[in-house]
Image (cartoon, rainbow, N blue to C red; front, top):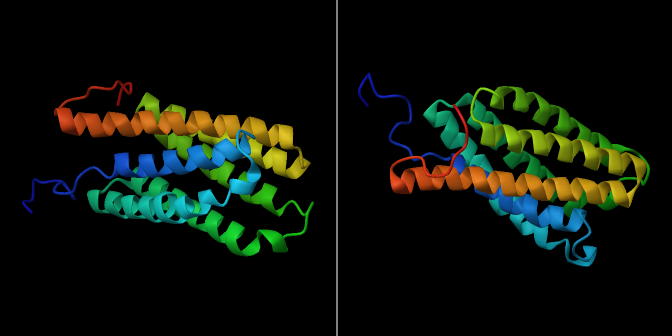
Length: 192
């Protein structure tokens, strides 16, 4: 690598992959949270949470580190870890958590706090990412509220916010993929 070449310049942009893994996994889980599907099928989320949302995003985060993108590395690595922890929580522990303990609400609240401060970082990037992070912050906070209150109606609202978040993330991923394939920006994402 020449001295003038930026770190990781030889690596493709991992952002669209990370956003796509996040969007698809969020879309499927949020469909259940919104009450659009029977909860008996919710196990379908676990494979996505581990593989695409978890490992896929974690890898995207590691490639962002290689490219020197602290924001992307922190976001994708963290949300990859979120999905892996979600998989573990549901697969191994959720039955052991006493009802009404507030533990799941705290888990979601902590992710809402993390997402809120990542939103501050996104303000310097582009409007599409700001929309993703604002919607995700709201999603986590409303889901946390629903978990603390034990209220399915509030959880359903959080599910609909999650669906909006998924579509915003897919849109942002589409912008990155089409910018590469067309050799220029095609899908508007706002100023950088």
